[in-house]
Amino acid sequence: MLASKSVLIPIDVQAAFDDPAWGRRNNPDMEHHALALLNAWRQAGRPVINVKHNSVEPASTLRPGQAGNDFKPGFEPQGGEALIEKTVNAAFIGTSLEKDLRRKGIEQIVLFGLTTDQCVSTTARVGANLGFDVVVVADACAAFDQLAPDGSPVTAEVLHLAHLTTLNTEFGQVVNSAAVIAALG
Image (cartoon, rainbow, N blue to C red):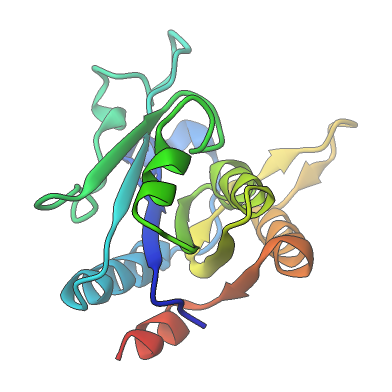
């Protein structure tokens, strides 16, 4: 499952997503699974590239200078880990991520974070289209309830599952954190 030239990419694990304005979220254990994975990955000495969303929307809690822009506790970059700061959903757009991965000979990207249906899904899709082997860690991602175009509610569980399903069908493989941690051993 894990390639020898793989990198873990935590996406937007930022305090802003704890704001009640985002609404109800699925997977309340996301941070637990994500921290276990991140710590195991770091202990294995494998590379990590952290991604942070810097919103350009004036009212956004993800805007630089706002407390919500900070990483959640435990998810801050450590040591010499790279940091990619983005202003759109895909971590590849307007950043050096692709160039950095190619320079390091990375073949596989292992992704987790917030939100499943937005930045994680978009980064996975672009990464696959650029030729990277993509792994998405399902239990280390989460989504929020949303409204469909007709105004009907769509639960976070449905959005999470739908995105993971299409990612697994066409863009890479979807696994749980325990499988990745076991593969590190």
